Length: 290
Image 1 (tube, rainbow, N blue to C red):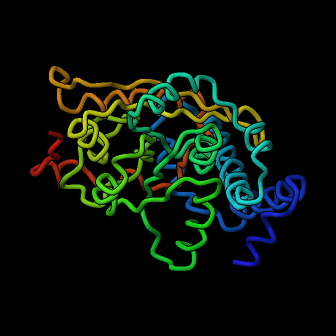
Image 2: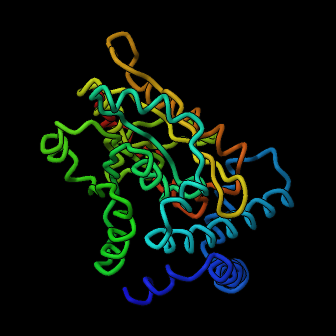
């Protein structure tokens, strides 16, 4: 832990030098998940040439290396510097709801630097419960909790969310969900087409919105330049949900996410084994979204 604290205090000029070395190692020496990345890109962009696929892959490795050092840097950033590096374009669509006592669901993705989103929200006066999937390594779980709690978000393991909803029901806040992960229980997933492939999504975000009658926003994180981002909130749906067909919230999120990925293809987490499950094996059960 001391080593990572030391790294976090290094200036960006040095950290990005480390990132350059890490980029080279990931791409040329380690060849980190190269086969997974290539397959994901080829199947997601069948219209692109081999040269275009390779260019996106190189950009992905650059993005991944930068995210690693930027995430390590987060606890040592000053509030002013983080605000300078992440510009929120339309905070006015979220703030009035929080000030009126309403909790909001924020569905985001592994795009840009998603680890900075909860911190910049809190710095703009919006409490955040950051929902995450616990890591198997106790050391890295402790490290990521330390990083994710920077500036005051409340990191919340997925399995404790129901308890947190009760314990913190009096606090209007954003419940942040990284919603493009692979469901742990694929037989309970919501299946839909995404980037030309059958894809399972966690149904929890839509279930929570419907059961608690909460509005849902897509949090779009776009890289402007190295270490600088733009965060935009896009309304997905809001109550009442009586006439909204089941699955609509997830499909609207999917559409917005796919558009973001197509506009900024290198900035998504292509090393993620997003399509390791297939519909025919799991579709018999189906997700309950009510």
